[in-house]
Image 1 (tube, rainbow, N blue to C red):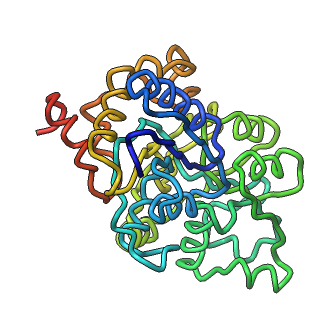
Image 2 (cartoon, rainbow, N blue to C red):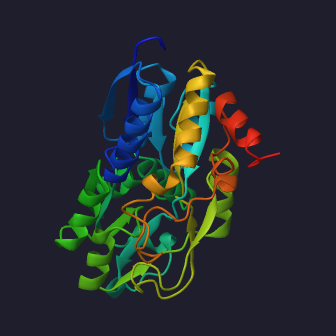
Length: 316
């Protein structure tokens, strides 16, 4: 990538907040780097291929959630057949989220294991989604295969590329079992207001498998979440943090500047989120620079980002 007169390419899943954060970054870079003539923001469904696009040189800056997407790519595990060890973290935007696994209360089901004998229609993320990947592995740990369930006639369903599409099938009565992330988004609230749902826990041994084999993190969908719909603390997987990442060959001075601009103009990046109740805001405010370099998954920090955080006393 040339830095004497260049175009910066950004790539992510089509999440509205990612577009907002990219736009602030583009504006600030344009002020501080007049040689930046253009920024191309490309939004393509699927966090899994978006990570590959950065590693393969299709763009310089990416954003994904959760950071384990980049971790799996770095180590060549899970959905990634090859190691992508040119990936580097810049920082994480603080975001508090969970994998949500919901079924109608009238099913009388309290565990994932019981789903095998339940006739249902599912709605989940597709094969390019880390949700789709995680669901397949979790079900397999319980001896359940979506393909086998469908072939037997017990299950039918939808695999979609957008969170809103996934949950809309539940809202509009086309699906029973809804699995995705984005617990603070309006569709989850609308679904839980229109139909009493049970939120299924992931057993601790299955959580441990997802941590040890793929790098996911354990979490709890806490009582009171989703506008009070969650009635008990429910073990699940963490889906927190929006990871801003790049490649090792992207110049150090550029990544240093990107890190500096996000941290020192964090008030701009918080616009649209600050002032909202904690359980309504997808960005956790205020952003804390001393934490933003920590929660990046298991990939190295880019030297430009590391230098900024160290020079300014945010890491030792």
